[in-house]
Length: 166
Image (cartoon, rainbow, N blue to C red; front, top):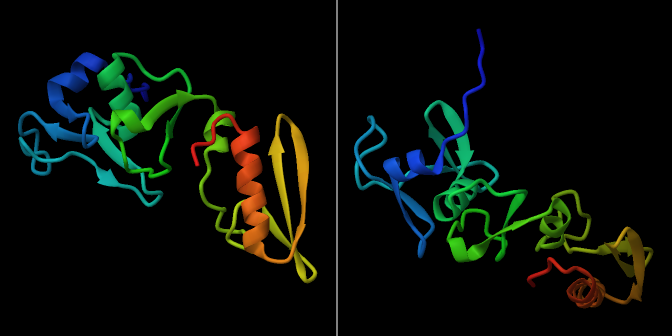
């Protein structure tokens, strides 16, 4: 029979680790196996750059555990890394936000982007900038360079995205 493993509690987490709010690292309180030595930093960086940990038979993301450790309860929604660094789990760098706000804090274009710049697309010999906000698409104009288009995007992002921290 396959039963779902319950989520770890704040009490259990504090029993296993010391969380350093200044560095965002979890430190094992006691030796719990060959890879979990007392005093060692817990977790590893995943292929997507997040810190991951396996506890009591279940996988967790370090940023969600940091929130649980400090606040005593699981985040109500998504945890956003304010500075955009996915492995920076200092509590001062984390905030509990909606999916929409989290998405507004993007700092770099997706890997499929032809320009490598947020909000910029090529258009013949020019560059167009656009942004989505409040369920609307705003066309920001056509520019002579991708850098000018990106600058227009960033200015609009700061104005229209409440979740933006750039």
